[in-house]
Length: 433
Image (cartoon, rainbow, N blue to C red; front, side, top):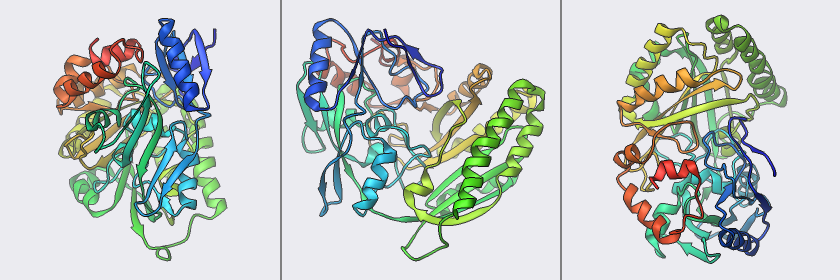
């Protein structure tokens, strides 16, 4: 029996069978065989989810060999991509085609199917999450058949499957609506949280992409403002030595050391955070969009993230700040703020709502429970919708209130997987089986 573990090391599983499928036929055969044997099926992407979406004692299906671009429609700017394609492979492949995804998160280790299944989103009020770029999907269903859907073909399945939690079938191919490849002018600087919050909404409206990192127990934030520029506009990319200094030595090497110190001496966290905040100096550069969006994160952590109405972000941060001041909780990781425009994807955290995302993190060697419990209580007062791949405790009863299309999603699932082949304990908790 094989032991599976997620990236953070917080979720493990002992599947009865593990299959690496490199073709759609191989996926169909594995699913059919598992269903006949009474086994449930879960699909493993890169393991970057912090929730037990993948954990199974049945068949664990890896689609990492199902990778690559299969077709390009240059006139419409669309590509078809196999479901196991990692974003760090997809992004340069799109660049070579003169294309790009409109928005990305800050990590590119996920597979495209895993990223859309959990609602990976990025930042930018004039942008939406990655699932909004999906214009077609092909799934292998519980009986081994394939189903292709889009706005024009089986639109209800399409609306459900763009963020499908792996509960409808195995996404084996994705059609993506891309944009012409573009460059971003990045401006990063430190400032006071107390000065930023009153004009945060104006900052968000004034730039294409805004990402804020606030260090608990300090009044310091790092603000990242990214704006689209032309091919020959703005400064050049980071020099190799500066990229290594910032992204390898400071953001990974030194940050790992400061977190280890915080784990050994929790009382040192306020001082550690003040030092860490000051290490993130100002910088300005321009580069291909995906090179600006994505960064290397090797320091392991556990994360909880909720989407709230964008106007509620200031209140959530104020309540979090009061909690930190009151408890002196040792949290050496920054709180992250991002913003995304409303979309029409049924289980997207931004469904029909301009959203602000607040994410709290804890170093993997430290107990996240007090922070996550306090955070969840705060966002509950603001109709917070949990990121599907990040730690939360909500189940079907509460999720039904938060997602207007929750019941239609369940109806699509009943149609596609009445025998509940694509499930586990966590999915049953989420969907109310």
